[in-house]
Length: 448
Image (cartoon, rainbow, N blue to C red; front, side):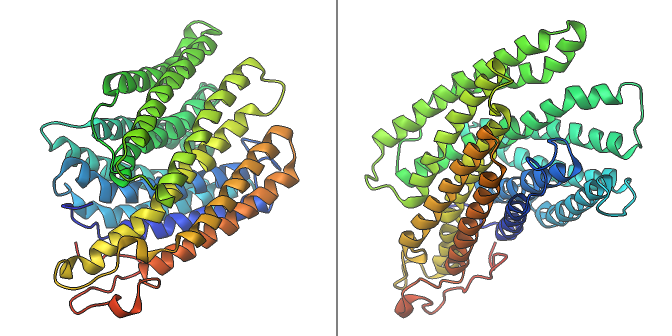
């Protein structure tokens, strides 16, 4: 990220997100929540939000703190919100999970804690979204990645607005005649706005720049208009589907099919652009993070196919849950872990050796990691995801629980590798800390 300031709190976001991921995987491995329990049970809501907000939400927010100034080629706007937003996210998520546990009889908190947690989460996400949007919009011309991040931020606002409303309903503070109908119609929109809208579209936008950067591929020639038009139209169809069902019973099915078709078309455009980058790259030998990131695209394609199969054959295999799992744990988590494996050592290298660059011998970015070890952990992780998808499709709970523990072991291994990178543990001893270099702190940057 040459030319961009180092975000002081990005590593803090990453650290908390990894703790949430490990906690969520341990919960799934122990049989907590779906598929051992109902898909809408409080235990399942705990695991879902631990992964969606705690892992993916914090991961994306931390990455955007560092990445958005690169897109805009400008200093971040309202950068001071990062630290208080992280505190609000942690306390808000904790309150929300406590509410879910109480809803299921596992804790004794007043259910009003859920709207309180939601208020903290909404405040934090809005503050961060304003910071990101203001930074991107400060640039006279916005590139493809910036436009996609803005679309993702709009989806985030829809997601958190619906989520906050649901906490009012579940806690009993919002009780109306249409509360049950709101939950029935709104939950799918809430879920897909988060997974397919905020997270996937943002991941697509970020990946354009990261793939181009790390493969040394051209940053032009992409199908910008078709991609953005397809994604925006798909989101619009998704958001109007509940209202279509109210006006014309059964119309929501047709609208959802149109949304799936539009998402599939946008996916084809995106994959075509990535394939073009791979073919035109100047770095012929791809690094591990790029290979793992490109490999995660397989899950995105598989998820779209499974969503279509769920629409066609809803009473056969569990295509719906398997598609969500493939999106969350294969596509989004796989891509996130892959880019973490590069971003952490890259930012660490800039922080540690930036002050002496050109004045002393320093290690390479690649010297801060051991790809031979990292490769084994990525293989193990994706083996776990495949086993988990198969377990959901076939209704094999034991296989699903085993898959979660396999993923847990892989993520723990990758976390140890990131710890070594952050502490310069793999750097050659003779040039590890030349005079004037900065020893990075584990959880935050020493320089901004």
